[in-house]
Length: 334
Image (cartoon, rainbow, N blue to C red):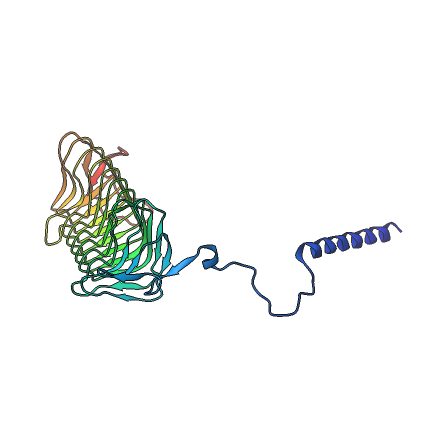
C-alpha cells in the first residue's frame, strides 16, 4: 500500500508540473497558419540604413553623404569618382554617433579621387567604421581626424595616396591592416589606443600616435619611416618592429618626447632599434638585434642594456647559459 501511495504521489506531482508548464509555455495546439519567429531581426534591434543614392545621396564632392546620426551599412562595393570622397560624414558637430559597417565590401578609389571615407565637419564626435577594405584613394583611406572618440576596427587600408587611417583624439584603432600607403599607415591623435594592428610598406611611419596614447601588440614592418613613433606620455608595449627605415630613415620605435613607457618590444633590422630623443622615459624588457644601431637613447632615461651572451648548441633536456643579467627590467641586445 505504501509503495502504491508513493507512485500515486509521483504521478500527481508530474501532472502538476505539466499543467504549470502548459500555462507558462502556451497552448499545445497552436493556431492555424504558418509558424513565425518571435525573435527580432538585427535591423529591428538596431535600425540601420543602407548607403545608396536614395538614402545617402552625394553632392559635388562626395559619392555618398551622411548628414544624420545613425547606423549605416554597405550593400556592395563602391568605385570612386575623380574629385569626390567615397563616403562623406557631415553630421552636426558634437552630435550623436555615426556607425558604418562596410559588411566586407570595398571602397576602391580612382585617379583624382579624394578620401575613401572622410569626416568633413570639425569637432564631430563618436564615429565608428568597421569591416571592409578602403584602397587606392588619392587622399587618405579613412580620415576621421576631425572627429574624436572614434572606433575603427577590422579595416584594410591599402595603396592610398595619403594616410591609410587618420584618426582624431581619443580614438581606438584595432585589428586593422595598413599596407603600401603613401603617408603613415595608421595615424592616431592624442589619447588614442592602437592595438592588434599590422602596418607594412608604408612610405611614412607604420604607426604614429599622439601624446597620452597606447600602442600595443602591433606589427610594423618595412615602413620607410619609423615602425612606431610616439610623442609624450605614451605606453608602447609588446610590439614587433622589423626592417623599418626601408629605403628611407627610421627606427623600430621612436619616442620624440618624455614620459613614455617602452616595454617588451622586439626591434630587428631597422636603421635604429629603439630611438629616444628626450630624457624622462623608461625603457625596460625590450630586445634589439640586427639594427644598424640597436639603441640610440639620450641621457636622462631609465634604461639598462645588456649585450646578451649567446649559448652553444642545446639538445636534450638542459643546456645554455644565462643571457648576461638577472635584472628583470634589463633590455637585451642579441
